Image 1: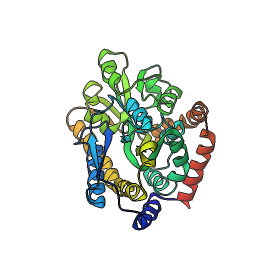
Image 2: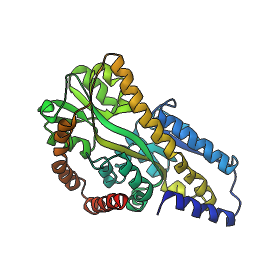
Image 3: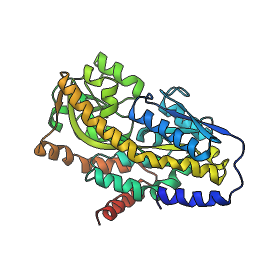
Image 4: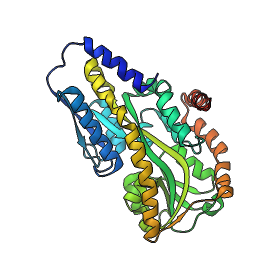
Length: 332
């Protein structure tokens, strides 16, 4: 089942549905500001929904976590139905379906082409049930970008992070991988990470490239290593309580969100290349590991993957099998 086929099916059902109720406005929360690729993405989604519905269903975007203070609090409010929608990172969505975190497993994908194929053609049946059980309904997946390392010293291989106090995302995928690679992993949320780096509580940090550069991590930790060890995929989700209160026509309008996936992918990947080039010209040391060095980073992945699956628990082993089956299908 694909998002596209779901949209078409609901669109057809809408033709038979009763006219929509009075105008309805939904609140969407997102962490990044409006000028970022993700900000432009949700603005685009709101415009499409408004156009598709003739203005009877609208989305009001709240940037910089205005509604609940941070991503973790917001996703909990969405589950309760106090916030309608959210555009969230892998870390945020993993709070309602831990198995979603497997998508950020280090070196899960052969390349971005494979990752895109799985997301577009195979991901919905793997995760829709788990997300609904957690209290949210997925409208579409969301490109977040590649995870890289910002450090106060040059890092080329895992040997260079041995014992290093390294900030990781507060999720097992990032934390376990860097620990296996040799670092002293310290999981920290968004608000705590920059102060920790400035004061020396940590000496390096992992972040998606665009976000890390946008908020200035390269200024505090100017040695940037493009490990791309994790491809970050988030999603746009709606409270199941809110979704269940909508009619088929309204649900179909919201599913047009998937039409903007290609826009966001292009924007994020283009921004990654542009921003890395910009900070290199500005004085940061941007290092891209050579083939042998990347082999060393990849060599740490299998042990980390096994531990990550065990740590997540739940249906992680089954989900992992389904993700590997999806990879094979995309390679066929």
